[in-house]
Length: 327
Image (tube, rainbow, N blue to C red):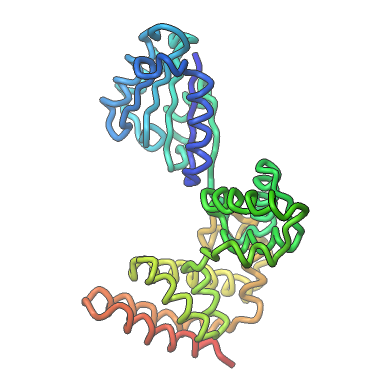
């Protein structure tokens, strides 16, 4: 009765795990007969997967039934729940039922509790950008797996260049491994600078540049985002969310709140540990300046929605917002 539930936004590591499971389960000579890939966006797909799971494999090896993008962790009718309760315990050992989703399963649902009882649940979440120590560990781990030796500074440079993008990290390490085979020894920061393209210019970095009053950096990051076809309204949405978080944390601190969990709850921060880093980020910020910024953000969003030139509009408002935080 092998059942698996893989979830998370790190689709690279999730798909790697699926590939490894497929190699373990399916005989390559009988793969066309013993692998079913089913869309999970409807209950009919889930019912079909359960039916296929009760079907014995053809020839050698086992059967793999993969339900992609399942919604069972977010909603499940009583009828489907009854089918799951009836079928999961009866799945033969030769059938492997795999459910995958980018979304975290809702722990309050009966279907989620049922999956936790019968399935191997694995999380493949992206490391939040502010957890720098975890990002460094991820680089060190994947470099070790690929046999790439890096100095401490090189690890830091590579983590800064690729951020939490594990697919890109793997690709860059493959490139570095070829270089290392010729150069030998540990690679230092000069090798990273020479071979790795920085790809972590994102809207969060843009928010940080604005918060620092660095107009030139903000405009440079904006240009990079637009060149990579980042939707202007998405950029604004990230800025609004980030500055709202900074505002709430600053407001709670000035009210005298010391409990990070209480601050996280008020600011709607899922991970209270993040508050430690946010405290440092808002330490030298003025509450009044944060409040001053929001009319600009609202006007920026409204102007973009009216169809004004997005590049000129964003540049104009970024200059104004950066000036708010300048001494």
